[in-house]
View 1 (cartoon, helix red, strand yellow):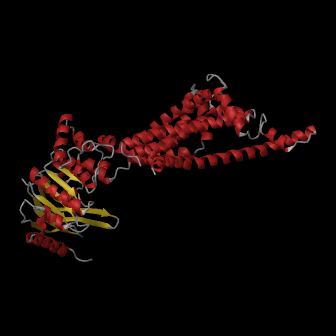
View 2 (view 1 turned 90 degrees about the vertical axis):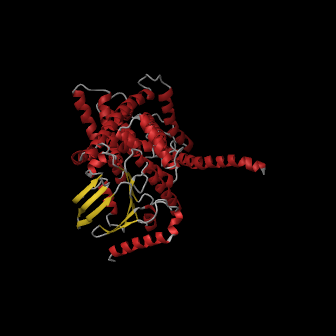
View 3 (view 1 turned 60 degrees about the horizontal axis):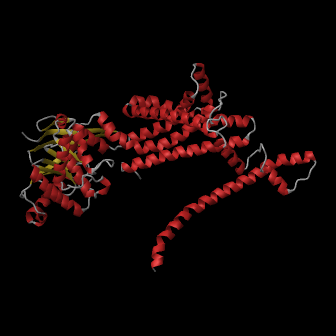
Length: 257
Length: 304
């Protein structure tokens, strides 16, 4: 069974200026354990597609299956954890309290919650910070806490919408490395929206290049990089060739209007 | 060198405190001075008339002394008001009908009851408005309309209608206090409950959170800064409402009744004393809410 299966998915928003085709005839298959990046200019529908997988938007055409289910049913079955660009931690809860929040909502027992919080905090290397409040942590640490929160209830899929977009380059590199390590360790399927070509190439097993008006997939590139990727892999000819291919894909989809 | 280092913090603290104190004291002094001058000027007319009638010449020092020691001055001097305040607060047993403490308590109890009712009503209506579009459209216009009616017109009607139904005492006054205090709470809570942004509510949806989970864990905590800001307005409004409610219908207890009887009998000192008690009461109530606000919001990491 495929983790994500999209057949002819379309999504049209009705606006005052007429219909906007956020997605048009999107076909995509994602196998379990893949790391898929969605890249493209603003308005190409990458975020809309991710939100459709999460059942935060409803496609107006085509079929979309997540773990073989309707997106809505998949959400209720806790198929995914979602990470937004901003950490969105509650200032009145400690880091542990924030990670505990979805667990409380889903009705996990207190002992179970404590065990899970400890495990995911270890996974994002935040052990020992559980008692701190969000404002006591740096932006990168806050985003790690929000990833831990998305992992806490053991969803198979992690959906990330430009999670490191608001962070500086150095922090971003470190978090990319950490995310890859986390992915290898947990074997999750990751859907990752980004604006950055190096980020997409460095992280992904599959890069989906999208273009706007209407939002569509122009190229799907399977990465030839090995799963084990130190940061300096970005200087290898293989990496540069892949980045070049992504750039080509972006260019061909982009009519300069 | 050592001395300078040791003295530095003290010197800075001293400068800081005088930095705050000096302007405050200056303003206070100016107000008192202006008040004295106004009292002399306003009370002088009567003294001059009296002197002409008695056929005596008044020297300026005489005139000044007399204007500041009248029994029923047009404008009592600050020291007369202070004396009246002291008389009313400390000069009587607190159970006496002449005690300002007793009157203040009568007003305070109705204020607090009205504040509680108003806050409860404001919060409940806000929750309804945020959760139901039809309530938003049907309740909000009435809430706004209720505040455009002068409270002076409403108060006697409420008192009369309720007393004809056999309800007197604290409750009618509390209703009028609530009438004024529910509105700021309603407006503040509607705004506050709507503060969580799209991302916060999307997160909740991604966890399939129910409406009540979203309310208790996200909307309500997020609204607290707005609630507290409204509560400060509401508690002062509740006090005003109570005093206005004590004016009509021959009430004999409370600061409002004290104000009214003072104006009946030309007891200006009594009016001013009651006014000052009301002002002190309002300031104290707002200060208490502020302290609770600061403590709560600091603990919640929401302090600005």
